Image (cartoon, rainbow, N blue to C red; front, side, top):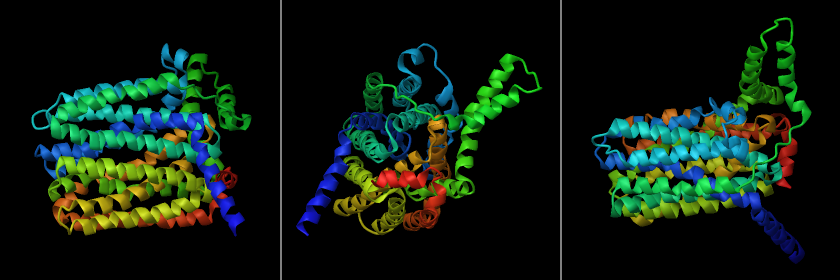
Length: 462
């Protein structure tokens, strides 16, 4: 019995040692750069607008700014294949796009800092759109770098450190922004957030461009395109090259995914679209909820945006290890159930007064489950990609994850105004039930859904 205990302890220590890999560590800083902009066009922005007297229905509609994250698959083929003038020669495909996107986020945040919501709401929204677009582009390039930088058995750990950095970015954009705004102003807070993007830009300059290892069979679809274009149509060379590039960059990644997964691809895409719908819908109204409950900026900054995100970090690291030990699909089922339960707890919180202790309990449960769910889901999405089309396919998955949730979340303010917070949180929690059912279904069909993947599941579990 004692021998078995020692063996298990060594196994856990070996599992955690994966976080010492240099590229796993690098994900910490890239995750920070990716996480920083999100709250600034979502939860933090919603609170700022509410404090400036903007009505909740309008705030709900403004949250659609973040829907750009759901459309990043549209321009992901450009990030996958288009070489940027000059800087791609020095930095490579992934890092050149990272740097350009990070610069766009920095400029957009500084523009937001120079606009007053009460008098310049339109200009503020346009600046937020620039931040969201640039941030989504940064996500595309970082996700591609993450998947290509290490083998599949390290993806769980990469997801864990990515979330760690991501949540540190959220702490600064949430708790840090609230504390700065409480002491100075929201304009000062957003200007400081723009300066913080320099961390991501420095990281991009220091890391190495990954080497893409692509087997010959991954180009089968593109070889068919070439043969077709070289046929009797006799198109001019320049036009033929343009058409070949478009088909190879846009059409082939999608054809490849369905070819590898068959009919199971439909169930996979449906699950991806539903997995985050519950917590994202709830998240749209979390800022206005805290404000209407009577919590101060300092209380929210310390409990929700700082302590809560530290709890999420713990959950993310724990989730990365649990994925390696128990496999992706098992952890997806557990995560989907936890997300539903913890979101329903907010309905209970809405019946209480603005007690800090109660808020801390709810935030702990919600963020711990969210961190575990995030690591499991990122590892799952990473396992589905073909490295010949890394950026495009992962962007498709992550866009699909966000698009339905962001769209439905835009109506959150309308529901709160019509039915109140208690009914809204119950509604948001119940939205997660289809994801639970699909996770169980996909787990039972896991041999079919991971074309390359039953092996993938075994690799991750080892």
